[in-house]
Length: 354
Image 1 (cartoon, rainbow, N blue to C red):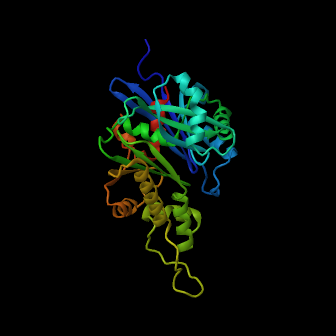
Image 2: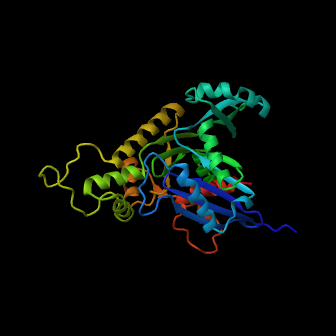
Image 3: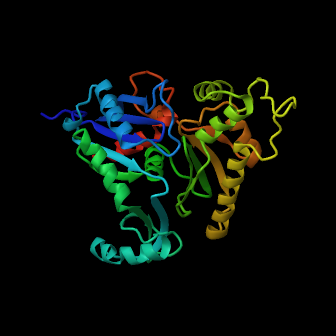
């Protein structure tokens, strides 16, 4: 007899600052989070690479992460991992009803119309999101493109530790999947998801009747840390600790500059710049979709719990703002998963890993 839960589903999220892993087992009641972890890519004596972690850094840390969880990589049967960033593009389009074979044949042509393919060798895929609510003879199709070099490098990293590549999703769809498997999308209007990672903030619009929209904004945790380092003369590790405990307005003296009592920054803060970019993205969404009813904002990612962040967004957008913890609806054996918002991508991947 094959027991429920005997085949764990593994979601692997390789970020710029950490590796997140979620291991789910299917039960008669739903899904059990049997193992999970957030593993830093850089040690206390190592410098963060703002250009992104090299393969030589990621591979040993990834192997160590699986070892720490008691998972043998070559024995993982159901794996899903994610790619994202500037090398990946996604956009929803409308299409007439077609078979998968017909969709495949017209896919590249449609992608060239709608996605910013720069001439590099690209891999293009699609996902049917459902019937179009306004045009019954059409369906909603999510087009996704990634550069072949980026995709193959991702797959090779997995194989370096004897992982067998399974589903390779995009960050945005993984977060969406973790949410819609546990929550109903609004009938009217949209929910805004903000995944605030290390090097980028990913904005995604989620709605039952409104089209899928996503955009990467290159302002996130690293920009916040840099601001603290500059304003208060902190080193990287100290700034990271201050950011986690006090946010961007700690009670610390500003650094001295040219004999002044403090460093006067004429430019906007990183958080203000992020708010402006989000606002610009939402205005674009309204223009393209005609939808201007935003229900709420959900925060995920490593910087989601930064003190002062929720209050800033609530004041900026006059909307309810909360952190989203996908683990809250899972069986966690009674344990509270404090790093749940960081696991949103990994949990969404694990739910698709079969």
